[in-house]
Length: 75
Image (cartoon, rainbow, N blue to C red; front, side):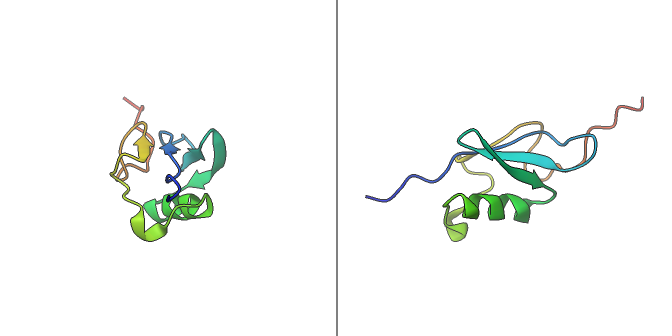
């Protein structure tokens, strides 16, 4: 039986830039682009070929994989 892929959570962009990535409650690092998310998940045991950034194994908070800048609050 194959192991289940790690469940990733990508936090909203921080004011300083980047998005915190965690798997199973463990913070893996700060991602600055989609490739960073893939690398963190690979290190956590996922097959990089099987990673779908828009699939059900990744929960994006504060925007999907195309959002990397914090919201503009200067208004």
